[in-house]
Length: 214
Image (tube, rainbow, N blue to C red):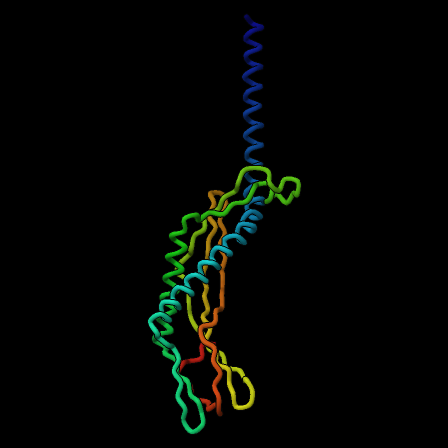
């Protein structure tokens, strides 16, 4: 009987020690994962997330400008006075375009059918042989705040008595990758041409009706 009790006590100690070792190993594994693996996984997934966000930006710009073209709404108008061609930009229309693109980007990101990106655990470890091994580390793509869309103008010489006039849209969004163990934010900035035209004639210093946002 005494020997049996001794065996039970040894077994309980063995179980307790095994649980303690397992808990310690689990804690070390989770700490290493959070400190080293998750940042590497976020870096890899961030590339996928930016590709998704860039596609949404392109789609939103195309949708808004296509609708505007279908309604035959121009943002630029030209007139000539004394051999000088002057251009006027509809700043109200440009601001509306910026607002519509911002709303479209926000809506499309929030309504993504598959808003997660993932990478195998082994790939995040940096060990080539384990590139496809291990469970998937998933991050949810979220937008932080609304997309910021503004415009800026650019004037460059295009030859004798000619000036190239451009209007650029600047799109800035902040995306977040969210995981229970780790999260990462990244800013994404795009510059997209809205208008590109050449003005013939002398260029007076105060001929334009659109403020230079640069």
